[in-house]
Image (cartoon, rainbow, N blue to C red; front, side, top):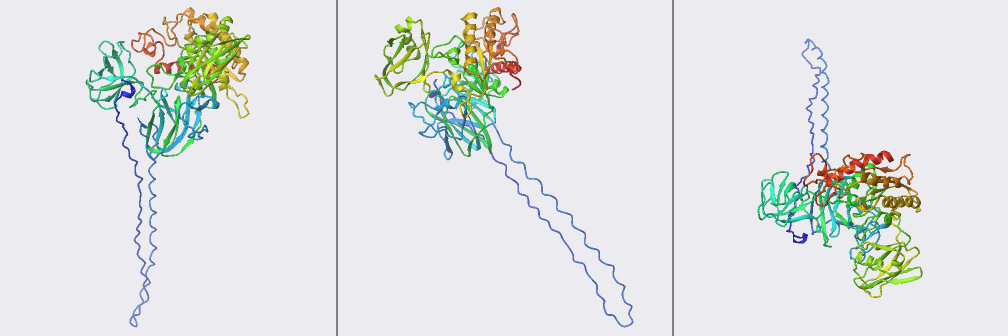
Length: 638
């Protein structure tokens, strides 16, 4: 069942009442009697005069009134909101767009981070969303969580976050503390039945036992308490029975509709619908809270109180280059991303350039490896393509010879463009090649040419309709465009972390050492203000052994040799050896089991089954906690 087919979900809000302030009235009544004074009375002649009466004592001073009791303390400011999600905007709230309507002027109420300010920009004009903000150039996966961090103060009790159906998910922090991750449905359907603490999922569910372990099942309709959520502790792929961490209030039956999701939220986002929806945040007590929303695209908020800029969590700039372990989630995950956990511990402000499927050499289609993202050759270009129909061609001039691609469709895949360029006669004769990446709804295409020094390109979009294609300029790499600068453009100090990757498994140690050495030398030449740290292979996606082997040690030694070319930090070579325990010792996350079928005596329960070898949320926390003291020992406590 798709997101659009999901039944309407009843929204829950918690009834709340503000305590009344007591009014205290103190009435002080003091009774007082005036003294009686006698006077000389006339008597008959010869009567003795009466003796004078004793003086009357002054009245006693009344006791002071008791002090008024102290006023009752103000209500405690609640931090965690009640959150609902639907397509109806709350009336009466003040709208604050992320970008001013039909303008590229930043709304000063929001503080943006996650990329250099020059890279955080309006979404492509081909989508009429003029108030949508994205990091349009800094990361291949524009929609990934962590691309944009939006921070602001909200004072009030009602906040609607505008949510467009483009982003992967939204991660929310309040007062710099993680609150929740809101995402898509991992699976959904109609149950076949259930028991006190079980649910029998649809027959179309996975036949792999344990597949849904650590995910959450939420009642979305039919029999059961709507939006009640339970975590899966075991799953039988033969019977489709999921065992849960506690009993249902009302056991499900064959009419129960359910959603399998990452966390406990009472809804899931719509996915790539392009529709406008709203995350409704509600608190019981009015007050100022610092809100940080981490997502691929941010459109703004509506509120009952004021919205004001807020400082980001940290100010020490930090750029990370890594693979999918750094990019984001890939498993049951109801905690912050691994990079957020790591950076917060060191008080660093993150620009996350992690991209799944990449390494020093290895890369999947439509992405660039570490060499090209850190130090691309001079023959690298950005192309803007905004057409809605027709074809275009690209010409390459190399050593005085011009070759032109066959016509390419306006919506050609990156792999199609790459194949067409690599088929050109002058590129082939030079022994060169191209990698083509990006070009999604917000980023320009990137063409990186290898072994074609001095080559130039041109584009012909005369056959395109509904738009055009043009060369924006040279692609300088992701790091170069994100180096922090002062108001004069002078580069400021920053930390740069480059992680070894299991995506280089098919390459030899010598090849990895050469690639990593190139990266290290280029960092020294291009980024003199960087304090750079290399790490060994942090995550072994397809491990065939529970223990560290000789090839693991030699791979880390190859990366360590490259790290030796970097400037020392506090007199230390900036390398974290992830296999320092030595041959025969357990890896950081070890065991060939997974969260579905953990191997006794190992911590393989920290590994996902839905994406082999990747950490669950608990595993991401474990990896970050392992790495933090290792980096602190090099750079200091942070």
